Length: 434
Image (cartoon, rainbow, N blue to C red):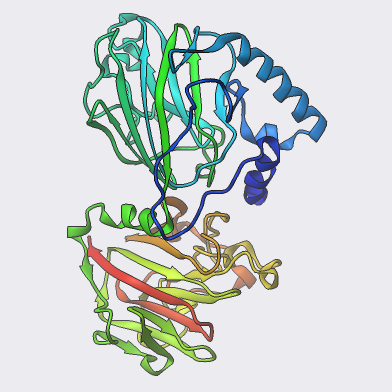
């Protein structure tokens, strides 16, 4: 399943004529998800794995969708501009996929009802009766709004505060999701703060890169209104990610020149506020300062087929892929010339040692936001809000081509870039030391 992760979204597109999220730099306005009159823009689907749906033949898939649609039409109605479900039947699913977005809606339900909002086809922002003692053992007493299907004890599983309005009143929900990073406000109170939403369908891989919004229902009538969504531009998504705890980070690039950097300064240039590897040149450009444990944030932009790397705890001399703790690949993994690489060579991987999950880069030519955490021998790489690598290098003993990595156990060193002659750009560089 991991090998074909990047194919899932394309297959689902064929299911419901999904439209990919706009990546325009201009801010988009909120768009209504419900027209107040009928179910246009939605289709029926119960709690069903999007991976299994994608694996079906076209004929099987159509038969299932027709079956679910007929069921949905029995239990969903429109009354006075409100979307109403009687507590039974298939859920309602948007025909369109969403990647990074802000979702707003209102709901009103009844005692002992149980519902939720699936994000990217995945359960769920929880909605339930916080007064029902029968479900206190499941966490109902903590209230609605949490990512209930996250693992026990994981951030976001339980809401931060009890924010439900009494039955008979409308509740307002706001969801901000970039990659898997998810924040939820219930009745203007923050109940989930920038938590990673887990992939309920397969916890070994990250949340899907994009997917539909689903309205779950079972156990009691629920009404929905004022459903609207704003798709975030790349710039807005990156700003959302970079603004979290921004005050704790220190800039390591002034946006004007290479002050504070050493090594192959003649192989890089500063253009439009970004460090760019000169085409046909490159080498290792490193910070003057050494770092031990840290969190680094940066944006990068790849040209077609672009290749570079992040040097982690590197010495001033030598190949960071082997002499540093590691080199984290910065690579256009989608380019045909890289189709047959070792899985430990694709973007985000600890080169030759640990493979990152593929499929989360933005289209070539757009800016990507990446956060790298180095803590002891452990490394985490988060790309555009999704964790694509979480590894402990101390536990790795098998290497690509049986090549030794003598620098793997380094406890400090320089941070920087390992250029390979492609015009890869980096900007918004900052570090928080741990």
